Amino acid sequence: MAPRQQPLLPSFLYAPAAASGASGREKALAPAPAVVAGAPSEPPFGKIEMFSPAYYAAGAVGGAAACGFTHAAVTPLDVIKCNIQIDPAKYKSTSSAFGVVMREQGLRGFFRGWAPTFLGYSAQGAFKYGIYEVLKKEYSDLVGPEYAAKYKTLIYLAGSATAEVFADVALCPMEAVKVRVQTQPGYARGLRDGLPKIVRAEGFAGLYRGLVPLWGRQIPYTMMKFATYENIVEMTYKHLIPTPKDQCSKPLQLGVSFGSGYIAGVFCAAVSHPADNLVSFLNNSKGATVGDAVKNLGLMGLFTRGLPLRILMVGTLTGAQWVIYDSFKVMIGLPTTGGAPAPATVPLEGLAELKASA
Image 1: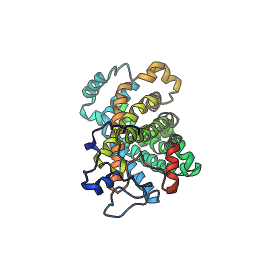
Image 2 (image 1 turned 135 degrees about the vertical axis):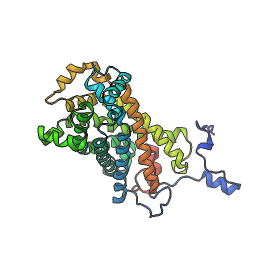
Image 3 (image 1 turned 135 degrees about the horizontal axis):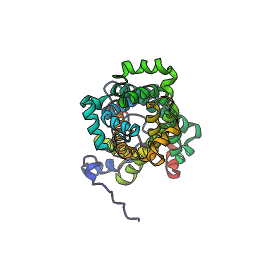
Image 4 (image 1 turned 90 degrees about the vertical axis):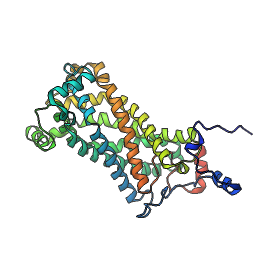
């Protein structure tokens, strides 16, 4: 008999309360249900059926909360990052940028653009998470159980990329206002006067001038965010915690959500940073081109200007987003994201074969 694999985490972090007697041991060793079609706990207002319209609507609401509140919370870091990207001669480093903003604009300067940030990323989060949940299920059903299990990472990538295309259409106008307000202190006080000012000067097309670079930033970011997160969560429960996810405590599950989200966020920041520099530059300068951005920032600067601050910001942001999203799902009686079994439409008798081929 092969030696039993030792867990990498102490058992008190994940094991349920010890059962007494033979029946307790049998209960602790009983296999997890093959399909989690219900929720980890019954909410007071009733159970939401998995993959139902209510389930997808919950994903949209959770996504809006996760993205809107977290992006608004890091507005001070975003102000510094955008100014470093736009005017590297004036804002030479993160520390000096903080000093310049404080001297010239005061404490309020760090919160410029919070309103378009909150509204834009709330809309983006609703589309991104809601559509992703739909497409993850639809793409899995389209290819069938065997290929869905074998190529699950490709499904994560395809679903998240498609969702982000629509999400950025909702985000782009608010992103344009945000960048102008944050990097041009005299341009507008906020969303109320910034949005109509752009429309008067450039038409509605001016709100979408940065859409293609925004896709270039957000689509790779979101593909990395969802695919990396889903796989890290799965590997965590497979190799670090030798207990099925639905038998772990909710605080532990949410801890896994944050840790996995933070790691995913570091990869997201690195992959999407050149396009982030382009978005900031193009939204700040009327008539500017990609060539102008490369000339101003330099090819190396396009990849590195503001990157350390963005890694800190995006890592924390992504980890917090997954915690908020999964906390909302737990609150309404749904399981957390990642490390889950195959979709509920898979027959019970086929799950063992699917797990073996995955």
